[in-house]
Image 1 (cartoon, rainbow over the protein chains, first blue to last red):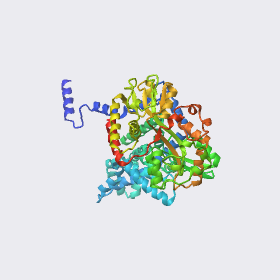
Image 2: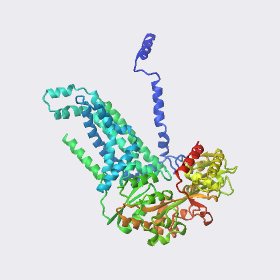
Image 3: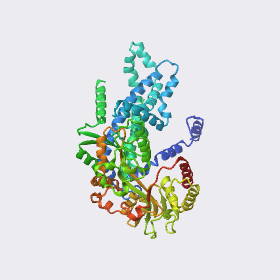
Image 4: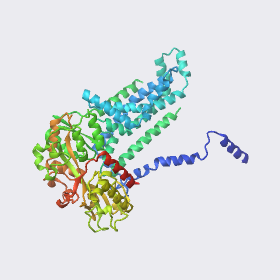
Length: 274
Length: 347
């Protein structure tokens, strides 16, 4: 017993993966990240128009939000936009990931990697202003005012978020199976379709879901790029904050929060699956 | 595989359709760019039905966002609703169409005091939308003295000390402090700027907060007075009847948002119709009822909710309105001094 204990201690001590008090640190981190959300969730059930004075439990703000036509309209628009942006960005990101991992090393590979991840580094407001000016001149030249601008912008900044999980997955897949397929005279396309793609699929799905959440949450770029009548849920909420803030905003935020957490959670589970 | 493909296509088509603009059945179109949570849906419906025009409403969250988007060009909007202090920029940058609302048929309904504002002389560009003020919100159960003075927050009476909230609005607060020391906002006279700073710094220990919310702190009893907007003052009074709204005699701040037509508007005629429409008593009342602020149109009272039509916060008595003033944007030099005063106050 005593010896086993000492052995265990020794193992922990010399195990590089062991970090003392890690559980405590993890709890503190999670608390710091999520504790500020608790009052938001709590007061979304408040039976009062006041934000922080508790009157009793009620679903009324969820009902109000659910029945608010404007909220319905912008929610559907946000979902449609997130769907399209994540679809296109994932297709592009998959191609980019294949092009930067499944090929012989070439000059400029590092630069390409940096360029693909540029939206992660550049402050959002810079991208927003740049797009405002660029799309402004396109709008003047063509007169087109549809939703393609938002789809393009969201697709662009979602690419790195789709790219990273796909690339990570590819780097963990060695080339043996693909080589075997090639040895058996499978064409590159057939190899991709029958071997690479099925193995890569969890990574692609994870990338798509992450992109979906990122698109769903975006405010700054959307606010500057949106054309007439194209408010999304976040930009609508931003506008609502100008005057009296009612717990309706809490209710909408809570739903958005829970949906985002769920998607990110699913993404995590999918990408963990071997 | 094929099935997956098909369902993917169906999904993306469905998504595209969700996203496509609604079919336009009406004879014309109008794109309105207005503050979020500021346009009554009934007002839009009424306009659409009266003129057979399909209205598309888009929100903005600040004067700066609206200005940036319109300046970039190709925005696709016909109407915007800028605030008074931004109006000179819109006009001098050539962003507006000179639609001459002053010659429109409903201009006769505009209350005299709003027909010739400094920021749009003669109203060649703008039709009034809504307006309000920044004044003193005081719980008269706690303090029963004169509330029509900035001394409420700049030289607080004993009863209120330690329970005062100040809206964190640099321009308005320093402006009111300058009125209080006998000067004007944006003055370049350093001696007055210094006085205003001293008054603010001396009063500061007697404030409890500088926040954007007063409804709940009043309800909780955390604050008994605040410098704040009249709309919120009214909402607070409806819950706590002792809360009254005072108009500082030294000078208080007015704001007004106005309907303008953009120079590159595609639907100019409909936009003009909308400007004229907003000067009808019933339309102005609809806008007021939704946003809970006053309008500038004679005869709108009878269409307004009773709460608004009788609210002393909204219907400013004539003896006080003369002390209300619009604050313009200060010069960059004065702005620098404002900022350093403000940094000190906010510390």
